[in-house]
Image 1: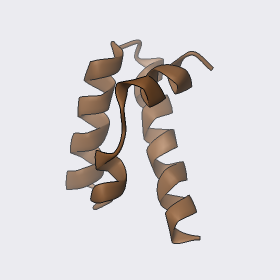
Image 2 (image 1 turned 45 degrees about the vertical axis):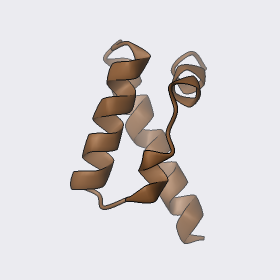
Image 3 (image 1 turned 180 degrees about the horizontal axis):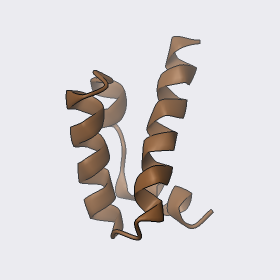
Image 4 (image 1 turned 180 degrees about the vertical axis):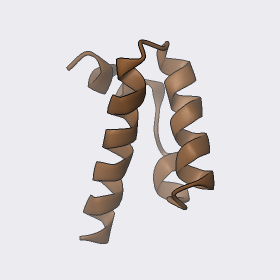
Length: 59
């Protein structure tokens, strides 16, 4: 269940950044940086790829 909470937190971060209409690479960088430094998501957030961000951005 902890893994699911982390996934949801990452998804929420991506959606918040996607609203700002930034390009996918910028969103990946911002989410990795914020997720690692502020939320301590560690390896979970490091696995984010541009493709995942692009898919969530256009949903």
